[in-house]
Image 1 (cartoon, rainbow, N blue to C red):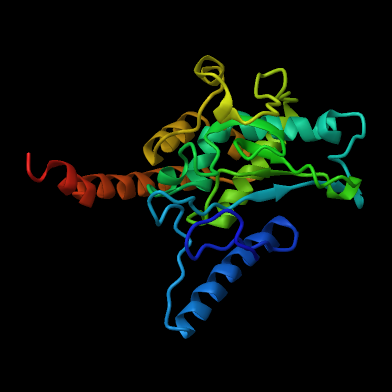
Image 2 (cartoon, rainbow, N blue to C red):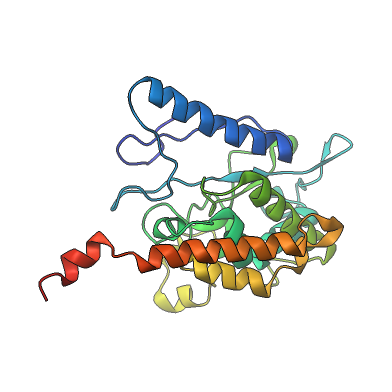
Length: 266
C-alpha cells in the first residue's frame, strides 16, 4: 500500500493479480481485514468514494489482461501502446457500455460525488496511455508481453465485486465478439490531459453519467450484452435497478446539511 495522491488518512492498496472470482474474493477479504484491524485500534476505516469534500476520493481501479494457453493475447509489439487488436476490441466494449457499467461499478449516490473533474477521477469515456483523466488507462510501465494490460478507473468499493467484475468482462467480450474498434468509434486515444483541452475539444468526448439515476437509466437501455450464457439473468438486472432506484430516491428525499447552509436564512 502507499499514499498515492490522496487526502488525510487515505491509502491505496494493491492486490496481486488473479482470476475474476479470486479477485472478487480478495476485494471482499481486503475490506474485511482493513475494517477489523481499524476496529482493533479503536478507529474506523471507510471505503466511501467521497468521504471528504475538497479531497480526492477513493476508487476501485481494475486491471485487466487475458491469456490463452498461458500466452498473453493483449500484446502486439506493432499495435498502439503495444496492444493487440483483440485488446482494443475489449477496450471498445468497455467504453461503449461504460454508462451502463457504472450502475454496477459505481452503484451508490456517493459514487458520483467522486466522479467530478479535478480530483484524479475520470469523467470522460475514452482511453489513453498513462493518462489518469481517461476512464481506461494503459500503464506505460507495463512493457513486457505478460504485463500488457489496462485499467478501468471509474469504479469504487461500494460495488459488489462479483457483479462489477462480471459486468466488465461481459462488456469486453461483447467488444471482441462485435469487433468494436475504440479508435474508429472516436474514443481516443487521447494522450493528453483531457482537462487541459479547450471546451470545444472536450465537448467532443462523451461524459460518464453524473448520478446514480443516470447510470440506471443507461443500464435500462443497454443491458443485452450482459445476457449471454445467463451470466446476468434479466430478473437480476431488474431487481438491481429497482433496489438502487429506491436507494437513490431515499437519499434525494432527505434534507442535506449543505441545504441548511444555503437556504436556512433565506
